[in-house]
Image (cartoon, rainbow, N blue to C red; front, side, top):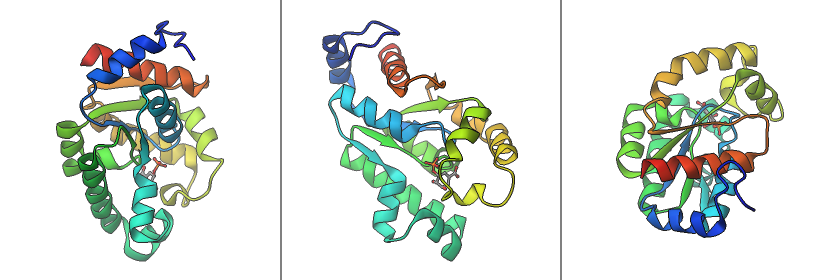
Length: 189
Ligand code: S3P
């Protein structure tokens, strides 16, 4: 499919893909669509996609919520950093990270040094709608999701803003967001 936003042809996307020499690492709040955009992006760039939360769950043989419940958030963050470091070393094409990963200093430094960080941003109403489709996010269980997401957005935006590329993901097709990521990478490289 062509990129309507930039009218990028598959050949142009291929040429941009060949210039990408590091994993593209998607960061941003819960519900912005990092995994969906990541899968589309990887398909367009003809590379592989990996979801860091899924990799953490595989490594721990536990769901993210169970890791939070049994061992606490600090333990989860430590495992998250190690798994993301491994995924970057393995050289995957596109990596989606959990919303808190880029807020951790060491994890952020690692991603900024060894990957191409892309902040996917989105309005709170859309985040509330999207996160409401699943109830397995530990940070959204104890309170009003709109309030929690508004607070997290305020607290985390300064960290996310350290990513060199920022893309707004609207209510439109995630294909458009993936196209914008490719345009952003093209401008930045
Ligand atoms: C978290 C986001 C989640 C998951 C964990 C913590 C966060 O990932 O890593 O529940 O701190 O924002 P998603 O952003 O994929 O929902």
